[in-house]
Amino acid sequence: MIKVLNYINGSYCEPISGKWLDNYNPSNGEVYSKIAKSEARDIEQAYVAAKEAFKSWSNTTIDERSRIMLKIADLIEDNLLKLANAEAMDNGKPLSLALTVDIPRASSNFRFFANAITQFSSEAHESVGLNTMNFTLRQPIGVVGCISPWNLPLYLFTWKIAPAIAAGNTVVAKPSEVTPMTAFLLGEICTKAGLPKGVLNIVHGEGPTAGQAIIEHPEIKAISFTGGTKTGEHIARTAAPMFKKLSLELGGKNPNLIFADCDYDKMLAVTVRSSFANQGQICLCGSRIFVEKPIYEKFKKDFVAKVKELKVGDPFEASSNIGALVSKSHMEKVQSYIKLAEEEGGKILYGGKRVTVKGLENGYYLEPTIVEVYDDQCRVNQEEIFGPVVTIMPFEREEEALKMANSVKYGLSSTLWTTNINRTMRMSKKLEVGIVWVNTWLNRDLRTPFGGTKNSGVGREGGFEALRFFTEAKNVCIAY
Ligand code: NAD
Image 1 (tube, helix red, strand yellow):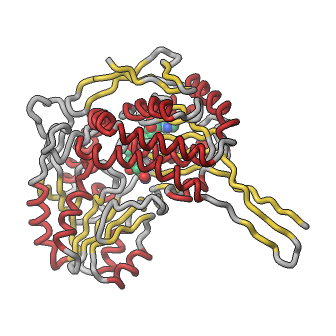
Image 2 (tube, rainbow, N blue to C red; image 1 turned 45 degrees about the vertical axis):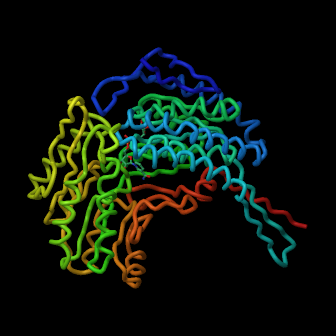
Image 3 (cartoon, helix red, strand yellow; image 1 turned 30 degrees about the vertical axis):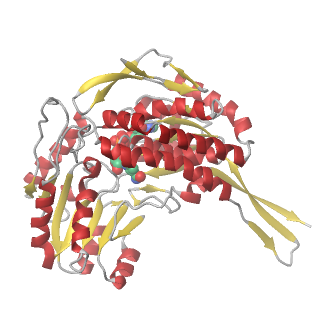
């Protein structure tokens, strides 16, 4: 059975405890590999390697760092099929999605930050009339911690690591214990690309042990975390009193606001995707759909008809649109929300049941589920489900739609469907979110700020925002 080993100081190694976790294949419910069950001692080993590597990596020229990162990007592309297969097997997502979204984006993350660092600059401020010149040094922080979730495994793991190392830091990183396989494979790619040993250390294991050891390590001065809001709260409570720099990308309950003046066909096609891509397990999925009254009944009928066409099945079958949910416990959580939806008086317009796939009877498959709700304050409309479940309800006025969109504790993204430019501007200013998509969804330019407001997080990733996060600004003031 494959062993998912730690990658520390440029080599693969077993966990010091000699203990292992089971790694499940969600498409058939079987254990197919073992994962290093690391603890504080392993994190310390990784930290020591990272600290040593920092001395030279922080002084490596930008050209050299960039060149190595471009090589990593190329090697990810060269290994597209192998990595996509590993991702689909580990996560349950359709192979077609891993091939077209997850792995290409992991490669783009390295390529983007390999280029971005060559364009990154700091400011200078001349104090005119005072014979003083100030300039800002942007120095790498040192050893930083990167912790990522299971939904877009290699995509989100590399989204943190790439800017961290581009800026001259060295890294102790932990992928989710639910989907560690592609992070494991990244180690050999880094070695092949010539990344010096110790620059990136990948440690596997559970959040409360391995992850906890990263966030409470006194010498790891910055933590970049993507995951659930509850975990984010815990990380903030632990790391803030230690004055660590924190970037927290957390949960969402994103509104999808559909106005009668939208480009209907485009809206319908994209809304199916924004509801159920990756089994609805994308923090940016539009899980609350609000539709303007005049087109509500038509939308309801057309949306249900389109969703009925989606095929739930084996992630490795080209015809599958929806694969397996990531784990049994997650599937059960999603099922509990479907039950709750009914208890709260919601009407299941489509789906709601577990799907049995022939030959894969123990896989974690659920039907895409549409719930019509009558009160936007009900729990299924307020709490993050993070699965193939969306709610729909009508609205009459723009202000009403805006009020409902903002009446949640989350504030990650929103999607607006309208061809009215004045409404676009009004709504974009008033939506309490970090990202507004208008007539599109998951349309990403990596230079743009990425992140959430309210309980969806603190800080922004992407472009120079990420490079600013992973550097410490120091002002040098010279009088002459
Ligand atoms: P999670 O919070 O359970 O786990 C995320 C990571 O944190 C894992 O690697 C886990 O091992 C680690 N962890 C858990 N406890 C820890 C601790 N005490 N100390 C340090 N690390 C710890 O989240 P998940 O279930 O893997 O992912 C789903 C969540 O992630 C959803 O809420 C989703 O919205 C969110 N998410 C947000 C974004 C975003 O960009 N805002 C993107 C993807 C997913």
